[in-house]
Image (cartoon, rainbow, N blue to C red; front, side, top):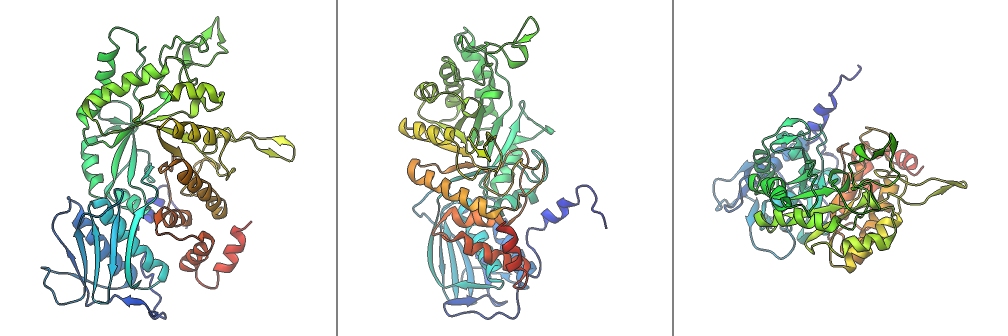
Length: 482
């Protein structure tokens, strides 16, 4: 039967796939087996949303493993239990400790993000094992990638609760919302504070992707008041927003740099002929740092902790020294967002094929990425990257998944080298096209945490067996190699 439009959403809403358990399997030495005698208990102290997390695990065990576990009325139960505890532990936000013993599993975290991450990890382990078996012992799990941002997979700026839950299971900890005006996203009216509160219950923060124009030169007499009316007002209205993304093409201003047209790109025309100089927004203008400082000042008056991210890809094609000039004058608490593959020089059978953004056609980073990371690190700026690292790109229009896992694995290793060399641990993992559940998401999650699976190729084989069975997985593996 032909699928109707939007039927894909029904499949995406099924977060816990039913009947994953393989009844022929037995637990191995060093494992415990959950059964219906176990109980769930949530200690007090977590923020709103902790009960949702516990109920999510209860639903998973019922739907995927065929186990119906009760919630304990108090902590004194004599039955074996899964205990969820708020506790101070060292590590970045989202960290958690797991202590898996014969009669008790204890998941400890200082925050709701860590609680959700720990519960999803338990679900992932049982999915991979195809049974409610867990390895005995203690694990201290810490995120290596501290920020994983992305857009909705069910529609641009569309975030029903089930999508928030799905994004948490996919490993995101922050969602991007395009903001075109106060209380306005690309879908029209948006109660942004309500979204922030709902997302928080799933361990997710909300990041403002700025689409609000602010055409003003920083030297103008009313510039400070003007910037405050936009950027200050954003954080007065949405004080719990995690931060804001600034992008050259969305931040055009009347630059006085003679290397530019000094106008919006739509107005950069002389006698009907397009000006050959770039419009501000596509050039590291000499006065761009002052413009950014004006935006920065307005935000910092209202919120001293919000992430402020400047995407520099619009002028990633220019000489390194011009880019250094701009970066060296930015406030030190601004993060620089760098697109991974754009402007890479690639040759195919003698043909020059420059690589554009949002593609997996290049697994290695581009020259702009490498030089901008090195510059930002040298200058003491936090780094962020547009990584396209969850299996989705714009290579085939709106196709939700590009099934080339070996290429993604190679990209992950280059990104990890950037983390070790320059401290890159903030990823913008998907753009407008959103995301879709796929094997690459599981590979990404396994590689973004410590301790982690080092052999992603071995993990891929296990994932194929999990999803397609022992008989089909070798053939699928061979197909994916080509």
